[in-house]
Length: 173
Image (cartoon, rainbow, N blue to C red; front, side, top):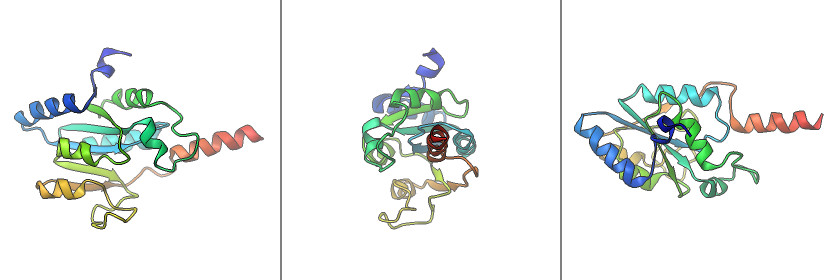
């Protein structure tokens, strides 16, 4: 893996140090997370928009074990965690990638305490009920620290699930 990509992939300790350095420089930290299994133009657009909300974009990637707890299907993830992390890290809009083991990024958000927490348009930045499917995990932490929670509209026509379905249906014809 190219050094410029590998250097963007951090563990929790490394990201804490990076965040400290960025904060000393008064950088606004943006955080988002996801599986990013089959990265597509929707992901690239979403991450570029998230990046525009601050100076540094940190992306949390669900570990392989974590993905299996999310009911994405028995064959998910398609790509293993290091492959998914390296593809996201290769994007210019992304400053750091952290793989997390839990089913949600709540502990990672507690570590980072971003200035801006971002999720896609299928989530509601105003939702306060943690049991709601539209609730953004960690929003309470970010808001309690004076941060902002943003929901970004998704680029229509793109989803990893749809790509997988197309591959499977094309293989059956």
